[in-house]
Amino acid sequence: MSKAFRWRKSSYSGNQTNCVEIGRADGRAAIRDTKNRAAGYLLTDLPRWSEFLTAVKTGRYDR
Image (cartoon, rainbow, N blue to C red; front, side, top):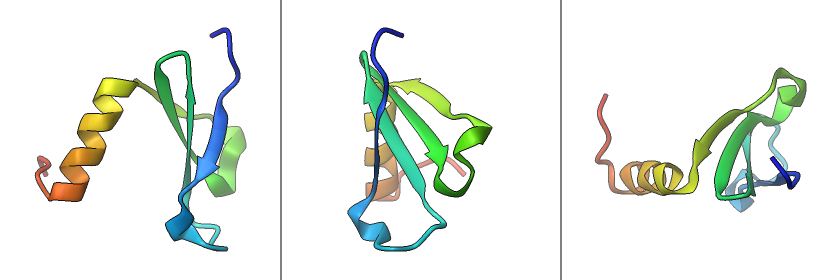
């Protein structure tokens, strides 16, 4: 990967520490645990990340 991820935490998280952070670079999205950043991250492409967010926001996801 040529660029480093630019990590951000949701503004809905406030000062909480039990959150996830999202990073984007080179057409990919990475998700990591705010409290355990050293554990690594989950990597996906941006279209799948967008599909996931839409499913969560609309309540249409497989359980």
